[in-house]
Length: 115
Image (tube, rainbow, N blue to C red; front, top):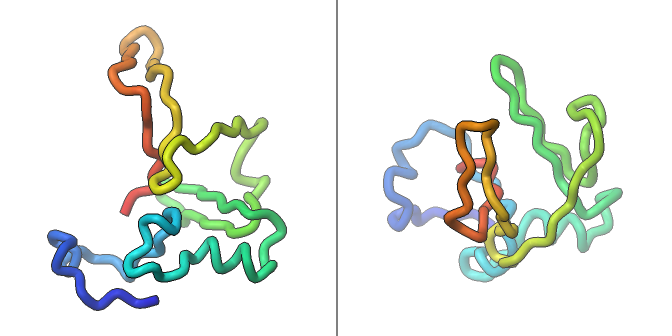
């Protein structure tokens, strides 16, 4: 699907990037267009129905469909349930940053790679 009308997205037409690859849920799809992940999963082209990001500073980042790159992490993943299958919303008990910050003002966090 291609979106040609960006009037509702303030400043979108002035930002400098090649495009947007939406990885949200079907509920957020404009005009009911199929999502990239949904289409890939249905097609059977992925080893697993997952994607992984590696966001780097001073070097190229990476987006992997169908798995994750084991060279880009150490340890195990901790999976949590999505609480709102539109955004990648998950339960948030609290945010803690050493002894500096301990906050629990909202029960939900949205995991977002950024637009």
